[in-house]
Every structure is written in structure tokens, then in C-alpha cells.
Image (cartoon, rainbow, N blue to C red; front, side):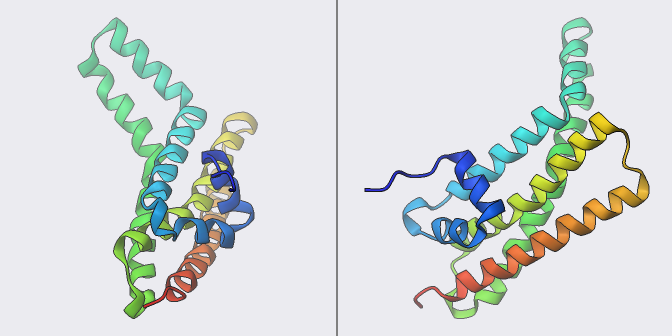
Length: 168
């Protein structure tokens, strides 16, 4: 019996061996796990790339009040999650439409979650780069966006092929 890969192993598979990650995510026995992986990855982005904002929000909450800290916390949360969540929404619709007769909305969403781990990884690396080496500028942000959309789009295509391989 093979061991079930953990979160970091599945995230690594989505980045390094996406076909294997998609096969694992399309298994009905593990339905919903890919969505949990995406939420965990967004949590990693929140903690790793938005630490300054989180610390400021906690400080404001302790010194002034929770109500005053909410906007800073929500800004950090939306900054960490917006791109990944919008990407997975669009990707899940695309995978479901391309799957045709083999459509299964839950499994299609799981495949889209795996496909969205690559753009989330790119945004994490870019955010960490910007924190350590300096701001990216407009051109750098454009390159990051194109890389994330390109890699994510390729994984959506692979996810769509995986969905079409299902037994009708």
C-alpha cells in the first residue's frame, strides 16, 4: 500500500509533475482535497508574503481595537488570495466546459485547484522577491502575470485532458 502524499508533496507534484498531481486529484476517493490544498497554499502566501501587514494588523488590534485592525487584515487576506481564487474560478468553468459529456463539477473543480497551484507559486515567489530584492516595477509585475497565466493556462489544458479521459 502506497502512502498518501502530504500537502507539500502534492503542491510539489502540481508544480513539478502536474500530470501525476492531476491524476491524484481526479480520484473520486479524495474529492475536495485539492481545494483544501489551494486554501493551504493561499495561507502560506498570506503568512510568508504578507507578514508585515499581518503584524501591523495584530498590533493595531492590540493597541487600538479589532475593528480598526480589520481593514489591514482584509487587505492582506485579499492580496494573498485574490489572484488564486479568481484563477480557480475561471479555470473550473473552462475545465467543466471542455470535459463535455464527462463533466463532473466537483472533480473538475479539484482539477482546477491543482492547476491554480502553479500561479499561486509564482505569485508567492514574486512577492518574496519583491520583499527581499526590491519592488518589481510595472514591467516585472507584467512578466510575473504573464508567467503565472501562461503556466496556469498550460495546467488548465492538462486538467481538461484529464477530465476528458474519465469514463463517461
